Amino acid sequence: MAEEFGCYLFCAIKTEENQTFGSVALAGEERNVYTVHYKNYAMVVADAPIKVYEPSRKNAKAHQETIAKVMKKFTVVPMSFGTVLKTNEDVYLLLEQLEEQLKEIFPKINNKIEVGLKVIGKKEWLNQEASQQSDIKKLKDKTKQKSKQESYYDQIQLGERAERFVRGLHERMENEIFSPLAEIADSSVSNEVISERMLLNASFLIDLEKEEKFDELVNELYEKWQDKTEFKYTGPWPAYNFIDIKLKAKSAT
Image 1 (cartoon, one colour):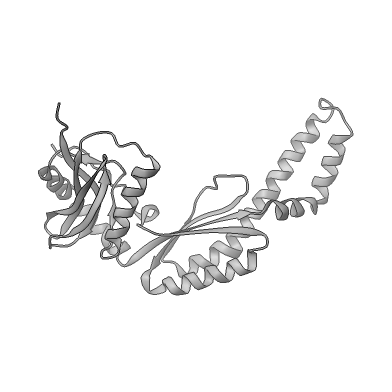
Image 2: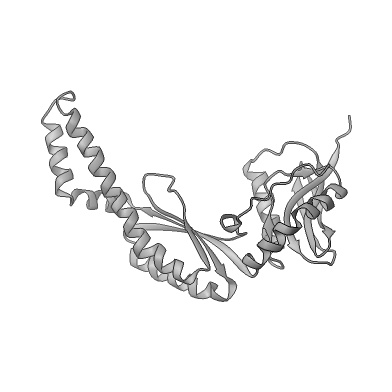
């Protein structure tokens, strides 16, 4: 049985002219990337099989690299990974449905990029900071001198004190790293940390005219904190964290 083909969606852009963006490897073949238009908006798409696309590293990379290629020329509103519509007509109808949302979103993100900054505490520094907390040290010594059953409440206290210690580090990162960067950014968000040693997980929306200034401050902060932490500075990305309405294609029929 022959595969049914549809339109794989990458992102929406603002243009009235037909655009092409080379090719992308989808479902084992190189496929041309082009635009489908509605008024002064366009969806960047590729003809590809209608199927469930697994979010593997290879597929996610192809999706992201295509959007990155488009970003070199246009401000983009990204579509959800693996979104496929049946026909170009469906893409046209989707753009028609999204027109009012796109009118609202594009002015907010025009000529802006998103960057991410994760700050990871180095084990040696975290252990050193924890060892300087006299109450934590006393509770640790106290629990060592008792049986597991006898030290039950001491262990609860120790856990609560350790939690306050970590929360204090997070607040320090917010004040000393996040806040100065947020002053330069057009918008910023401090996301939930996703590991024990992660002290900051932030996203920033930056005007391209301020990108150099922002990068310089990131470098300055890194110089200050490099002995204590690791910086993971990523981007540029589409404005994933700064689009109020999540754009996910639904059936246009």
